[in-house]
Every structure is written in C-alpha cells, then in structure tokens.
Amino acid sequence: PYWAAKKAGYFGDLDTDMQPGPSDGTATVKFVDVGQADMGFPSPGVFSFAIQNGMKLKSVFHMGARDTFSLAFRKGEGTNDLK
Image (cartoon, rainbow, N blue to C red; front, side, top):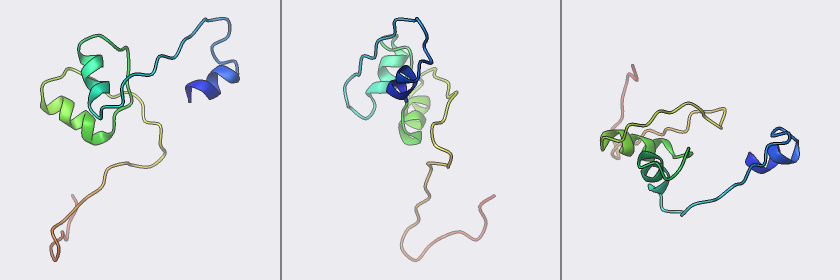
C-alpha cells in the first residue's frame, strides 16, 4: 500500500521514507510498544498477543475487506452457536 500510494502521489511534496523492519512475527508490536516504530500491521493473533501481554496499543486500520480471524475445533467437536 505504501509504494502504490507514493507512486499515485498521495503524499504530495512530503518527503516520505519507508524503513522496513525485522520479520520476527511479534517485532511490529514490540517496536511500536517501546517507541521504535510509529505504526505496524500485525496479524490479529499477534495483536491479541500484544494486548494480552500488557502492551498499550490500538488497532485503527484493517487492510483486508474480510475478517482475518479463523476458528479451530478439535476433531469431532464444534459449536452449534457462535454468539
């Protein structure tokens, strides 16, 4: 999304710079939490991990048009009601 927006001129005259970080699955939330990154795009599982571990983060943007959460059940088990 960043490169497409930059190419389309969405940043105008602003001199923006993309600095990709490490690819550790939880790095994005850790860096945002300690102030080494301004934002990140973690998976729902990683975001849940961050909240559960006391990181004070907020989710304000979702790139996909569909829910990225999945449900898993033990073989032969399931649910009759997803309220």
